[in-house]
Structure formats: structure tokens, C-alpha cells
Length: 158
Image 1 (spheres, rainbow, N blue to C red):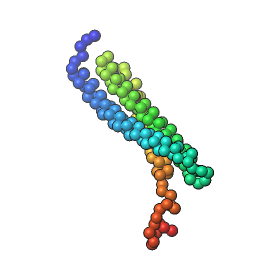
Image 2: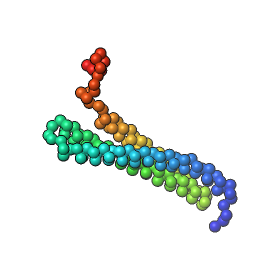
Image 3: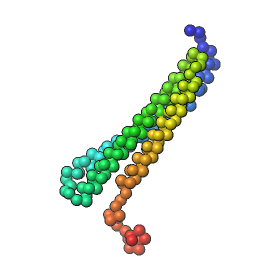
Image 4: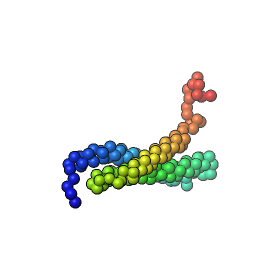
């Protein structure tokens, strides 16, 4: 194998820097998703422990509804983690493809571009799932109107 000029190696490293920064950001996003999943799991454990204590009625129905919503949120965040991980793996393959292409002189340009598109699409799906999970979380954490204590004259007390 012939020695590669240091300019070729330097250029390949320059090309790989952008995807490596993206990979770092994806790591942070995955960390955020994992933290989100942990919170949902913790909340579901609390609700699960409460259900046997509740007799039949409105409070039990509300707890079961919340548990079903938490289960749905867990599946959505898990899917977001899956798509985020696929994106990170595709970016890692892009970096590897750039170096392989630099070492053997080409032939991987189209595959590398397709991997980058796959990574971007996977990231978009992960972020859309995360947005949907946040929407569901907001739905489940609304304070019931009857529990709010409104002051006299407050327009929201009607």
C-alpha cells in the first residue's frame, strides 16, 4: 500500500469534522431521550403502586387512563431513541465512508451521501416523535379545573 500524502489525510479529516460534531449533538439528544424515558418509567411505577389502593370510581379510572398514556409515551420515546440511534450509526458510517474513500481513492461518494440522507431522515423522525411525546405529556399533566382554587373575580373561575 502506498503512503497517502498528508494533504489527503488532512482534507479527509476536515470533511469528517462536520459529521463528528453532528454525532456529538446526536449523543446529547439521545441522552435527553433516555432521561425522558426514565422519567416516564418512574411515573408509571408510582401510578402502578397507587392503583391497587384505589377503589372503583373516578380516581381509579383516572389512574388507569394515566397509566395507559404513560405506556404510550414509553413506546413513543423508545421509538425516538431507536431512530436517533439509527441516525447516529448512519453518521458514524458516513465518517468511516469518508475515510475509506480517502484511503482507496473514491467509489463511496454515493453511498456516503445516501447514508447522510438516511441519518437526516432518521433524526427528523426521532425529533417528530419527541415532539409528539411532549404533546402527550402536556395532555397528561394538565391540572384538573376542579382542583384549582380561583380567587373571586378571576375570569378563569367561571
